[in-house]
Length: 556
Image (cartoon, rainbow, N blue to C red; front, side, top):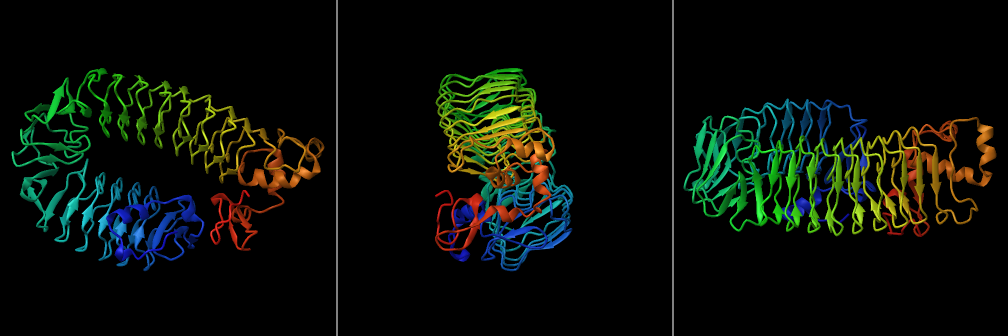
């Protein structure tokens, strides 16, 4: 971990330090409640939701940064006390804490990032400190807040901080203006949040920019008129509205209720009720959340499309068919997240980047063809694809990311190609019908719980390279049977290898072999994850791949 004084960090460095990697857990210290802190005490890294049962929690006084997703989804916490030392609250740090009612913000908080308190439905009151300088997009969305007092120190709001719930803004900052319940920047140059209870709205002529999701969930609106002065728009500012859009600005094109940039190259938002959408031929970029929760059934993309940005088709539950032309080089995070009607997909053969959670929770997805250009299957890419029966992983893939196939319940057999070197944590967890796994010689590391809770697994074949001194081609775990039968089938010199492999990667797989092992060794997860470094003699975590003290690689 790079050590630096937090007081000397700019906003860009803050952003970097709120993100959590596997390496951060190597030296992390865990308190009695299941909360992980960095060794220097400056960062609150994560919370183990399985063991965390504290209703009122006081964060350590030394903490400067609460990292991204730290308390996300924690359903037990009711009250959290944030000390005066904290300066940054990371992205989605408390999102989904559905019972969180009280938050005591310290007097030094400067940045509250995107979605920080999203879906904290019990949160009714939050006092923002006078130190606050920046509020991120949707930071307080889907809460029960009735009033937000903007402090004098506030300099920047990166997008609509409130969606779904209407909030009264009390403005004490000279950098912002509140008019008719709507939030603007100074001199009404940027429209940040619209909350007026009207059926039609003409955007003021003073407005030159509209923030992302500015009109989100304004269900009463029937007509929105974009004034000629508007030159820029953030992420789909009219998402999730039923209003008719009237465009008077020369800086945008409105074609068949599709909002495009002036040159027609980028699609900002879809406001059409048509079941079939033909995207104009001039479009080469589908912007973030462009089709969010659209009722469209089929989308036809032109041959020029090169980028589909984050969450472009998120929660389009009726979407059944979409073509992805070969011109596409970039698929952002969560592009098809929650598209529960999608059944078949074919990715472009020369796709360069495919983000995380692209097909997460596509519960009807049965088949997908991956491109030969794909280098890695990123985090949660197919998690929750419960109907996906089989997948051919191309030989170009070198890494299967964390929770990549989490809860793919229809898998029966997985063949890992010889190109794969790393299988990250939780990669195939809860693939409950998985029976056979074939792991090649090339695999150097398998993360914790990669195949855990695959209760039907009976066969695991492993290549020879990791266990060169053994003559056997690998490990074969038999269906449930007696201990004598297992011992006859397996050479004695494989028993120690089996103990380590099944304990760490295949925990709770309902194999008789594993049942015999777990009676001999208690559940000490750290035991198998830590090894003694041959170079410096210190102990380090195998799953990280390198010694924390001297950097020695474990696979050497």
